[in-house]
Structure formats: C-alpha cells, structure tokens
Image (cartoon, rainbow, N blue to C red; front, side):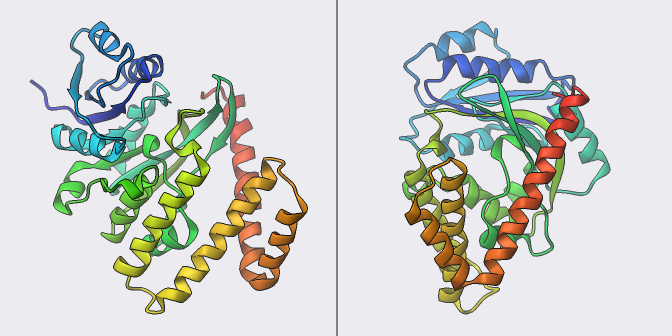
Length: 312
C-alpha cells in the first residue's frame, strides 16, 4: 500500500453534520495521496453513522479526552503515517485545491510549517471576511510571544519529522484548553521551525456558539496561562521577565478593548481605558493601531481580489 503524503487529523465531538462537511471537503481534494484520521471524543450524536457512511475511507479512533482537544490531536499525530500532518477542525472545511497547492509549496520551499489564509464565516455558510496569518519573522518565537497568535490550526500543515525529532505535541493541561494551539506553535517557533504563510485562502473557518474559542473569558484566561509559561519558564531573549510580561499585557488589553469597539460595544468606560493605554505607552499604542489598520486594509483588498477571481 502506498504511503500517504498527507495525514489529515480531525478531532470531533458531537458535531456530526459539520464533521460530514469537513470530511467531504477532504475527499473532494484534487490531490489524492492522503489518509484521514478522525479522533472522536465518544460523541452521542450521529457521528458513528456518518463515519460508517464513508465506507472505511477513514481511520476512526475513539478516546475520552475530557474536554482536552490537544489529547485527540496527539493521538492523531501518533497514528499518522504521512510525511506531512494537516490539521482540520470538525467545523471547518477546505477548498478542493488545498492539498494540491500545499504539496507544490512543499516541493519548492524548504519550510517546516505552511499556513494558508482562510475565509471566515459566522454561524452560516455566508463568507464574511478573509483572514491572513503571519508574517514570519527571523525571531519568530519572540514575535509570537509579544504579538499574539498569528497561526491557524485548520490552515496549517506540518512536517511530521520535525514534530517527532523535537518531541513537540499539544499540551494536555486543562488550563491551556482553547489556547493549546497557541502553545503548540510557540513551541515549534522556539525550536526554530521555519513557517511559510500563504496569503491565498484555501479553507473556510467557521465561528459559531459551540466553537471552543467563542467563550471569550475562558479563551483569554487560557491564553494568559500559555503566555505566563513561555514568559517566565521558557523564553531567554529577555532577562527582565516582569517587564516583558507588562509589555505583553499592554497589547492584550489594547486588543481586547479594540475587539469590543469593533463589536460596537462602545461605552465611555472602554473609550476611557483606551485613552489611558494610549497615554501610558503612546509609541507602542500608535504602532499597534497602525499595524492593525494596514493588515485590515490588506485583508480587505485580498477579500475582493479572490472573490472577483472566483477562487473560493
């Protein structure tokens, strides 16, 4: 039997109808040398029937992950036989040329991780936005730590050999739940993995009420736990860890307030807090706002560029 080039790892739990669409988006790929691995957390819906309907085209495993999705992904990594691992959440889907375009890049480029852009949809099949990820920097671990996550799990394909040679897996601590992917990519960057960011959308990322990261407070708490670990226990580029922590918290607070403003949650208390932050670190605040504006403009341009070219 031919060894698969890609292993597609899909964790699942009680999202049968969405899981079916995710699997179908893989089976419809123009590049065919892959295996599909679904790791299910003992779903109580129609997941079993859906898996059976695909007539043994899927490697199906069941575990009790107790809410730790990283545990399911780790099982998938260990069961994988492909040279490259591609992660796909059960509520996301891929464009039919996702693996073909990724395969081309792997043959041309010397990178360990390839992350493409994604269409964004909220609670429907209607595409609302386009998100690009990155950019890659020379000191990417430091950049990821100081600027927040800029990598998407469902958009990422990773060299299996790099993962195993450096023994990097998803952290299974419960305090990291919803931010374990951020920790995972931080660890890859810490080990000098080379990232390549493709600004072409090759998937659709769905946000809905059941999304693990949709719980803002829970996700923020988990993100802070990840950051604490990397700032105080792992990173070595800044000896003044307390000062680094203050800098990171400044950007987190700024980002949180801007998110509330973008959701039209404009209150005097929020505007007052933004003014305080701007006065506290005016240069950093201005540069951060400028970076957001430039990225939003670029994403807006790409959104209509790819819509016009009908690359969805």
